[in-house]
Length: 194
Image (tube, rainbow, N blue to C red; front, side, top):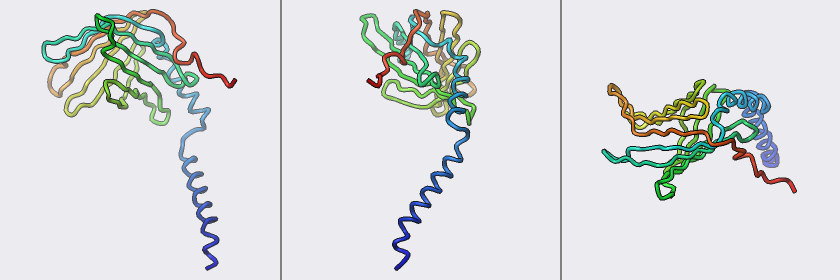
């Protein structure tokens, strides 16, 4: 009977111990993690800005959908993530494609992730940067959807390919953008404390 009044105290102690252990398992303190994320994303600053140009996608065999593609990209959370929005406009000016993504770096895994939302779907995909672009892939059963970007100066060319084992890659997407201007998106317009 005397144990009953101690149960809440023991439960609280066990919960506190579990919380302390889980915090201790997280590598690095927040300042170290944030600094590592900033350093990892800094070489990708060439992506930042507003971009525009022609793009096309094969939507079904023999049917090519052409758009004017725009991208706006900028750093967020004190340059620890990169935020991206893409829009494709048909000839009438209607938005026929819209995507949103967050590019981040995980210091523990030493890996970049592209968290993407497009066409009612979402996912996390590995992105491998280079000094002038990147490659990211979507696993799709036995097939892989691979996007390869080359960004040099004010020009950005990206292609999408379907890759099946033992077969040549089949291109289904291409965009050729030109950098239009700098952007302060998405950091601009933050709500002030007053």
